[in-house]
Length: 477
Image 1 (tube, rainbow, N blue to C red):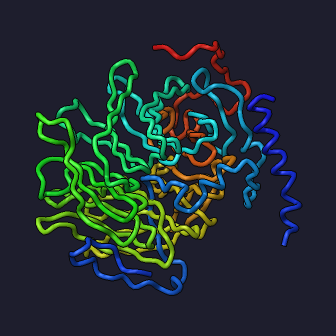
Image 2: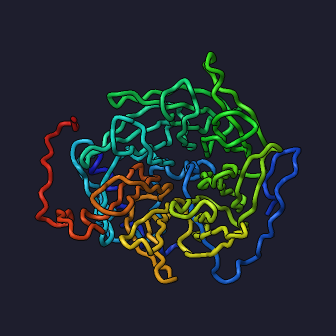
Image 3: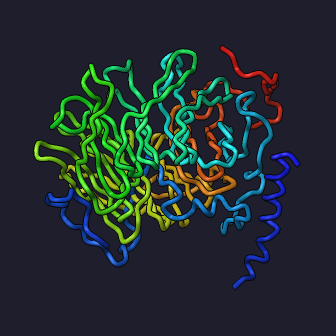
């Protein structure tokens, strides 16, 4: 029996089992050990009304933390306790995305494309970034459960992986920055469950290589941020957030040295699940938004006296992901966040530097990915996309003060990461890439011509559209 037939048979058996299954019966705000912790936040017993809102987006929360690793590995895994959506959305398409564009059905006004099928090995973190400087289109970087880093490069609708790092344990933390003066251009950094930090560099000819540059005492590396962040040290650095709860600073060694310098900055009460840089205002220190399993959203900055924590929001429930609005002025940043129980918040800093939180969506349990972007041709419409254990990528849109929801895509397994980027210039919107337990990375885009008034465009959703023949050969340029 072929792999395709086995997977199809598994899905059919799971769907057949659904009728039978249906008949069966706060802590302290984290701070550095030995230093004054951030001010405690009050945790409401029940958030009043439905007020609050925010954006999530960065490092992966590997499955082992909540024991999903064992569940995902089991061959007799039960069907997901969610409605899978239109059956055709969850089909497993035939073909190799490295040889031809492989399309997925998607929501109205959207189209899906397969970027990679990782053979059922979960892909936990995604990033859209320029890795190969000789190419115009950004690459998609995916980190998987076997400790591999896949740099996925696109060519006329096709996608090929350049794979490096073979840690053997999941990779979670991901960041890009010009941290090492010995390497030309920005480097990619990835962190593993085993506590190893790797530097990934690219070369002409779509070649990627890596080396281990640091080991963080065997602690799981969940999130990374790179840049000039700490004024106490000269030049750029990497801030790593680990489990057990801790924060490290990693700097490239002197030019004549080969290694990196590692310093433990703080022991923390809980785990940072994702960290993202806020837009930096002139003359002000860099600020990092973090969401934590403890249920806190905070802003971290560094001064001459060390780390400073600014509380934004606190809940008696873990917070999982965040995203930053790219069109908000640095003085008035907007952050979106997700909560494990399915809530989505929007947080905005006012002119008085006080934060206002608004609940914008009470969604399904297990909300994991969130991404801000321009997903509507009308720029006055505020949009943010979410993804999680419901299998569904959902678009939240606010128009004339009212939020609405639509489903863009339904995957065959639970979602874990969602990222936005500019990957298709045939429309005037951003694209989305999603990944998770299925091991697939799927690109979601508006069709050609969307938002481009007066531009002649092919109807890619029409059966009359002419597809490029599949020659069986990898793309060449």
